[in-house]
Length: 504
Image (tube, rainbow, N blue to C red; front, side, top):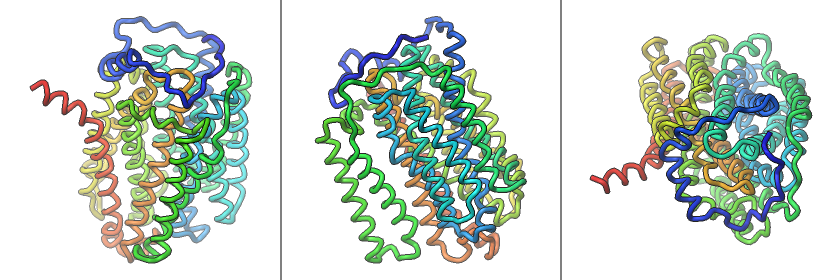
């Protein structure tokens, strides 16, 4: 087992030296640790990793399972597209708004303590979510689960980065860990289809026994660590970030009904911008900020975070639209829709044994570029879809390309985002990349919903308009997913393209 954690220095002080930066730049762009044999893990390390992987997989499952159940929830509770969007966004926004605080609290209060407490809340919220019938309470339980995941996700990541040595050993652990997260998200479509066939409530209750089992395993295998002596909480930073993002997403979602030029919409954007500006101001002056903005001066860290926004934001919006279109418009059963997308999940899950080897051989940067390129091609192909799609030619090619994109991009982005970061800022780096993933996804989904809502007739998700009319409403949202992925690809590839041009 890795050595016991030591007292953590102040996060506000830059810790990365020029030597570290140069070494890291080489590592993420080439083959880190190539030729160095991987260390043999102990039984305790394997069980620690399994425990953390189960929890991250539950996070991914929770988003995609409920996504499959949205049409059923809408029919039973009488909810339209705007309200259904909040069942998804409530989770990812709660998740994203406090991830930085979660990572910071793990660093200064003890990773084991934070992880187990948050996981217990997650299990309780899952149980209540499956029992309530009021839409407001349902969305509230989703938000609470997101808040709990905001503490388990960065804490689990930092437990890995502080218990597995940087280089090949850590890359291997991170690859397995993040592949479980991506696999949970992808395979959650099938699990959600099976659960929805019984009742949409089972998509909420499914996680409960697994979360309880993970708490039991965590008590046994997560090593105890000492809280930092000089820690502090940036409560106002957390509050302003959460309020700013909530205000922004709410304004985007409600803009089609209120009117884009209405006083309510303009005022909502202005208020959100002011609150987020206050967050930035607080972070530059807080003794223990949620985020040390200097960490983004490392080019690979900034690019990894933008790539995470592009990857997860584009795919979550794509899945939201495709779920409603295939079920509500074309009349596919939840399980049939889930099985149609299953090949992507199988590809992501099957990539787990090879992800770290690919990163070691080709470097994280090349794999991030390849992943976003594959996603972009998958979305572009799907834009051809019509009202009577043939699965083998109209859907399957995109599904396979999306599977390749996730399998290559997701673990590589996470390795790139935390490479060369000292142990005292691993919680911050992990929280930052996951904040970009979740908040970016919430914002892209909100914009997608606003675009769909602006489409007029047929946008209520209940199939009242013709299939052709509904497809016309949904197609701009599919175009947005494509544009977001391609923008991420351009950002990830720009430094490499510039380097090739200079060498030519």
